[in-house]
Length: 420
Ligand SMILES: [Zn+2]
Image (cartoon, rainbow, N blue to C red; front, side, top):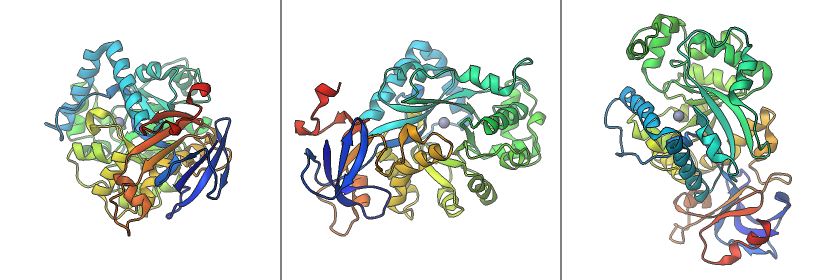
């Protein structure tokens, strides 16, 4: 099958017209404009969008556009909501989230899930995923007779579908995981090239807890019967892990809202990546996110929605728009790279390039694709990547199969029946 489009996004600032040749679910060739089986016209055709941070089991309606109370109360509310929904409700929420993701051109997610509900909902789904199993441990030890590597293996379990799914671990945050457990788990991930993700510096008080053992973070821990002095590292979390040799490229820093320039330097030097969730960030009424500084320090920035409960949607196109609103100085091409190439290059440099390919529409990549329209009212001097931020998802493919097509013209979906 040959798909033609006016703009193929391969990572460059100025996408050019061309055709993709798809065979057996993979891109086999990029050709100049010419005859095709489908001509998409004025769209950006790019690798499928990756939502690099989501909690699919929290795909719930949010009550308001901004957080009504404190962040700590909100966290408590999440724990209660999960209890109330029960196993069935959480799987149902995740199913809703999967459908919303696919209909918005997302072909892969990095999901964090505390108890396996997203995992259940994703069985038999086309959506590709890295499933991070969340660890929360206020205790200093996990198990007396198992090594951290064995604990991780038991915890994340075996994937039933290695072509679509990778399993990993997510110590929730520096304040909800005892520093001993955190260091043990991350050292083991580094030694075994296992991927990990952690919510870092999400709240301003995290730094005070880790350096002084005091503040709102300390009060939060006391409410759960933990001794906050155990959390007093005397340095930043990243400094502490760095000194223990536990930082490696297999780590994903989620949020990093209050990271310093030095910390960004360490994140970049260890080849980790960082996920920015601009919609969710706006919901929590936080001060401006330091993504522009992180980019300046050489950090590879990815985009995520976080849960629908805080983001209000699961669309990466919306997320690019939120990023644009928060930091208009970031060029559109960078925003597109954050949702296509960067998550894939993080996977690739950690030995998992085959799951999602390069994101640059290269021969051999899986044909996970999205077509985003360029509105006809766009100004003539607006670049196509810029204009498409106001466009809409026209169609999306996973492994060359049409997953979603909003076009009334059925020519968008040739072979849909025989492929399925
Ligand atoms: Zn999160």
